[in-house]
Length: 97
Image (cartoon, rainbow, N blue to C red):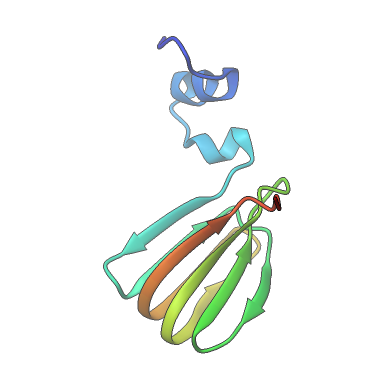
């Protein structure tokens, strides 16, 4: 096992599972500039054609997807897919200075 990894990361590697399944974190995948997939999300907090804000699990904050012609192409309890012209992704950890 690799040193410096958390117990959850080591367990996921040993069991050959994706880390988000054991560690309660989101998995964000970007497909070119056309699609963003968020697995293990916490719901949508804001939606519009230029901005979609998705809550991350365990009070980890949010991810803001910015662009144009944004549409939620798929949403389930486990996964969310946003399509359109993706310009920026911004992660906010929920803490304010």
